[in-house]
Image 1 (cartoon, rainbow, N blue to C red):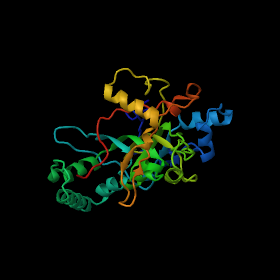
Image 2 (image 1 turned 180 degrees about the vertical axis):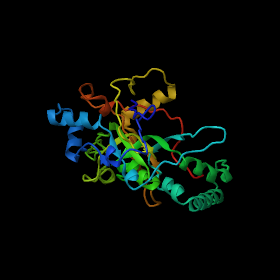
Image 3 (image 1 turned 30 degrees about the vertical axis):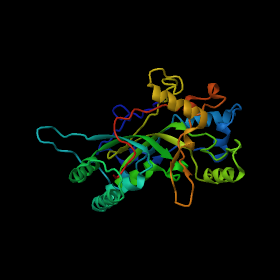
Image 4 (image 1 turned 135 degrees about the vertical axis):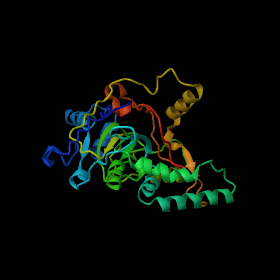
Length: 325
């Protein structure tokens, strides 16, 4: 399922320098779910009218933040030889914000970021790891090109999810770049492992079960379980509109996909992607589990609004999880 914000295509970013500050909202967002409400959303019982209305509001009301504008930040017109004043727009699949620290580093301290990349590549070479072919000399220029964008359109953006340390990814990027932003919820992560309600009573040995319980424990005060799309803008945002697609794409029934993808989705249904063993946390530990989106279909899926369970693949035009090698 793809939930667009309209900026050109996504977002109505209307910023005219002569308008007064009161024409723009400083910040606004719908009231987000409490932990207990998220648990209610994950259950098979019918939703209360109040929670159903709150769900509708959260999935149709974008968050808007113009703090950068009120701090005095403005657009920087791009002058290109042979063209009239231009608007530079960047599109980025930010992969939930899993590499947010590295992203913020290259946006704020390019030299330190390049030194870190060089050190990691050197270490990888010395330890026999495969090193990706990268034109290192081009990276600083590409960073400056990205930073010069007036509008950033971003998808797969986490808000209050454990895998990204409950960070509000778009808010942090807005502060780092001193840009205004809008955010729209694409879906809400209410899988039992995302919410820490799974008992892991699947025949596991008790010691292993206790380890899993500890590993998937969530901070009930911080979890918001939102995944969505966002726009960053150097122009103040007067209005934004969030339009959920009601059907569009069913992750479980899509017929036009390769056999390998069908196998992956079948495995996701059977065991859940969030049990994927991705890396070792330390030599003394047998393994650690990566918390990812579980695409198990809730039993009451037919009665739930699409953002709860239709977890579709957003188009990936640019960007992957950051890898320094």
